[in-house]
Image 1 (spheres, rainbow, N blue to C red):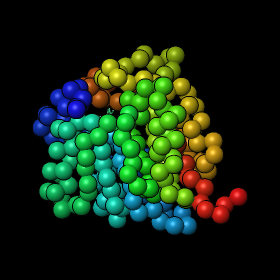
Image 2: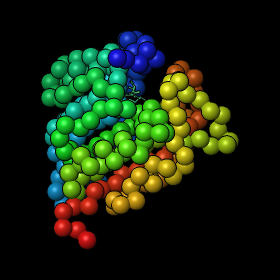
Image 3: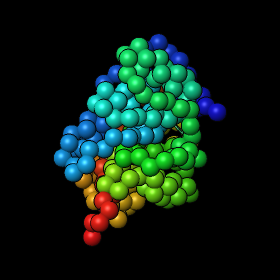
Image 4: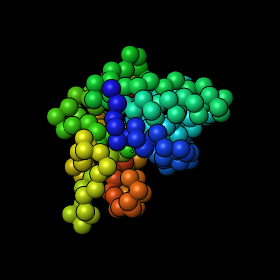
Length: 208
Ligand SMILES: C[S@@+](CC[C@H](N)C(=O)[O-])C[C@H]1O[C@@H](n2cnc3c(N)ncnc32)[C@H](O)[C@@H]1O
């Protein structure tokens, strides 16, 4: 099981996405500081070469990074071991992957668009059900804009409808949400992108 487009990119020398953590990962670490109970366990869905997984692990989280690309996962493992950071990585497909235990944080940056529309609701249900009370989800998803030409390096990717991501969290507290536009260099061709972002918190036990 693997994803040839990403395998091919991850097989190149260097880090395809760079070593700097995403803004979403940094926002999670910042927001988590103000939570009543500090989150400890985190799963990074579609972790690629592990830049965010490694960042979280360095900040004390117990991290599992999963990705469909075995080449990406191998690179992530090698980098973590070179840096002396304790992170677990596994080759998994987020369309079918089932969390074996409850986690405090489900994190997904740049991979949600690989979930086909028809399975999204059940996938979100699964990840929400397997999040500890008071735990958080931090997610982003590409959304189409009429004034931005469509671009995707991945033939399996399907855009989210504007606001769709937030809609999965109607019963959770929204810690942060919004939409941003930026220029991506993924695939070697600079292109504009719009993304929805949500950081949401599952109600803690005993909350109304
Ligand atoms: C845009 S990259 C983001 C990588 C990483 N989150 C980062 O920001 O560095 C999207 C990632 O999703 C992974 N991916 C695509 N389809 C997947 C699937 N069905 N299951 C798991 N990972 C998948 C790709 O291999 C790729 O690593």
